[in-house]
Image (cartoon, rainbow, N blue to C red; front, side, top):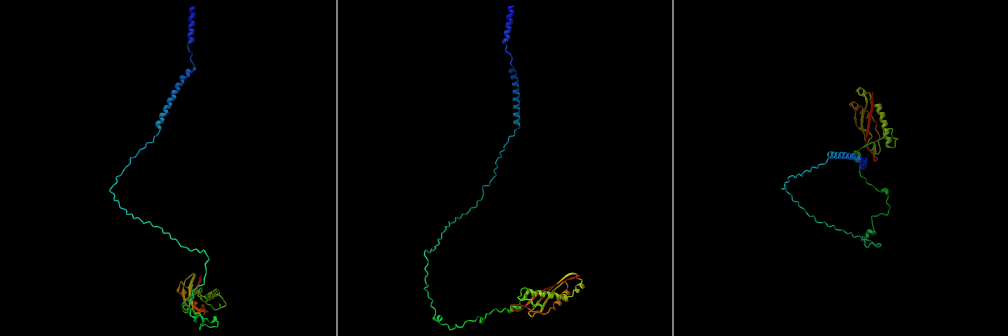
Length: 265
């Protein structure tokens, strides 16, 4: 019995001596495997990243040297040295008056003959009458005789019979135009244009001159048909004699333009 007890005690003591397994030891085994897997994954990712990275490769081009002909003709250049131009300072001498000028009588005495100073036989004691002075003007009568004035350029326009009361050129010319219009309406044959086969508005340009006697001369006409030109000339020849135009109180020749406009229906 003692032996059995001793054996039991010894077995119990041996069991007490054994170490109990801890939970930390199991977790350590698991963590080491996990760390290994994570490290392996990181290494694979790093390796993949290295393969995917692009590196810039520089291709250094070699310099090309072309052949240069050394036998080049050099033209000599002639240099001319210009002389240095020196600026010359010009000093102006100016006179400054520091005092008031002194004015003296002229010492020069002109020696004139005593006869001119004391006696003149040609001078008259009587006063000169201005009306007795005669002023000679250039004789331009020949120019006025040859020149032809317009109705606007003449000093005094011709006066048509019945327009004597007008005092200025504007009134005289308006009165003449009215008188000539009435004359044309009475004397001109309008049926002639119809017989010639004309229709619409017809215009006849008439130019004549009023000479120094007030007579109508040098009649010129322009119309679509010669028959109308002759008719217009016939009517203008019936214009009565007028008072001629005047320039510098001299009778002159004046040119007059008379347009004849009528409508043929």
